[in-house]
Amino acid sequence: MGILDHVSELFSFEHNHHSKKRKQLQTVEIKVKMDCEGCERRVKKAVKDMKGVNQVEVNPKHNKLTVTGYVEPNKVLKRVRNKTGKHAELWPYVPYDMVYHPYVVGAYDKKAPPGYVRNVLDDPKLSNLARASSMEERYSTAFSDENPNACTVM
Image 1: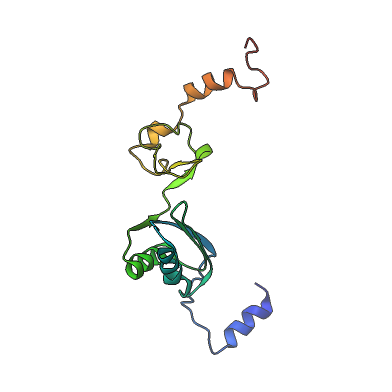
Image 2: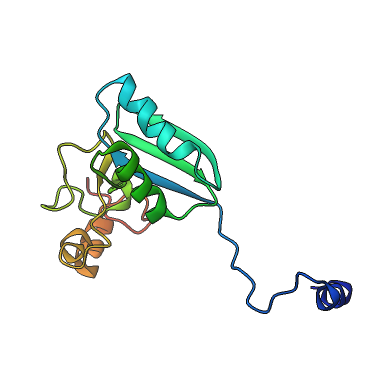
């Protein structure tokens, strides 16, 4: 912040010591069950008029709503639930590559879209099962193609 900005801020009439914190541009992904085109329209209409929303995308194949803008995730979620009357939750899936053991009990979900598994890294009960230990890492990299010192017997 330059000296001119500071001086102009001191003499402005709108100066407030408790300035509002600006919201960050973010993408909010929500899982909402959509059966037909009417459901799609209702879900999209519920959030497109919200303050701060820049873009709304609906993917009915994956039951996914993506909202981009200066919004808070919990407010978008609450708005979808109230306006549509549908059960909605923040997108619970992450790409398959993000989890070390994607077929562990809590990570694998039959309802997940192809290439996705449940996000178990944030869950304290399941995160230990989904993370690889240092011993597992050593054994798996011993035969890896990316490791230049790996065993070449195979």
